[in-house]
Image (cartoon, rainbow, N blue to C red):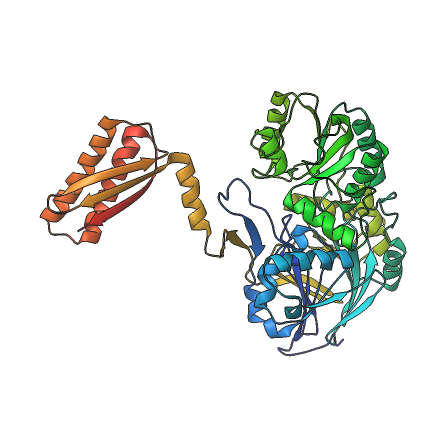
Length: 554
């Protein structure tokens, strides 16, 4: 690389462009660009929070990828969680057909997802890889894939060799010393990269605020077995459907304790089916249906169900609120939540738990019971990776700003801290060369909302209106001009029926319309006058600001 370039020609450099997953948890996707070649990593989604009513999913903006579609040489998928693959059905069909690499389970889950969207295998170039494989993308990118333990099998990080130097990306990870499948993180490969020299490290920041180490999956299995052994009646257990290793442990526990397993919930069925087909899960006994266990004693049944995040239509939520079509909870049943709420879901999960208590079930959930462990490493594990890799530059990734900043501060306490750390945001163009590490610009980035069949047709302005309607309701004013002007008022979510208030609103609106017609104003202006005067009156009379929709019928 020529460090002595003069004039306006920039020195050869690598651009690292996070399009999602930087400064947030969710919708992970990163683009690496060197000259006229782009390599993409992951393509995830995020889930809406309480400020996004009606939204089903959130995917990354892809303006930059569409503008540079011809430069994309390949796609690599680190693992099969929704925040890393869930956006692919929306992204892949709009881009050129390029090789998409991933582990067997990862690609199996993507294939299943694509089938649901009607995307044929022939439309996609899937290429299965294993830890230890070496991949090439275009002329400038060589990738060595290595294993990292996480809460799903087939999880990987990678060493990316580029013309400017080596980049190490951990992927999501925890350094589980007792993983469910016995396959440890490849720390030797991290050390090898560190010995060779690493220009940049991107590392998982999710638990940068948590001291110590994250509990192992085997420890959680022991705790679950102890809890289940003490349950008197039926057991209903929920966890993330993608926690394949934990699901396997639960199946083994149920078998040892003489319980037959029923799978309830679409995503739980999908993950267990794909994992079994690909050999990542083995059920000691065939699964039963809720009808088939009717003749068994309550102590012989365990239900694995969806609903760990309090989703309204999930199995556990329907059970808690008593509207499941086939199953009703009762006293003596036990419910185990082997999960923590994702930020933003706390209220929904607490509501479900309270209803479970009201029914009379025994409820087990963290932190009171140690029945869940994060799939992400805590501070000791993050420090261990930093000490092995010893990067020149550091880019904390996969976390909100507080996680990134705490990860950066941790790095500075180590014996060999990075020379420079950047706290990047989605859309930043991170310029990387031997002696340069800085943000040099931005590309379009942000959220695309999926609402029903609509993708991108809902913007922040619509969400503002939805929030306003949820807070103060909506009022429709219809001014009918012929044969005699009159106004009709229809409101929802505004106030209880109040004939006197409705009459006053009609009077104010009609006065505005009548005055506008008398002055021969344009109908658009008459409508605006009615809107303004009614809005001021309602605000003064009630202190509320419903969404007002004024209509003129000529």
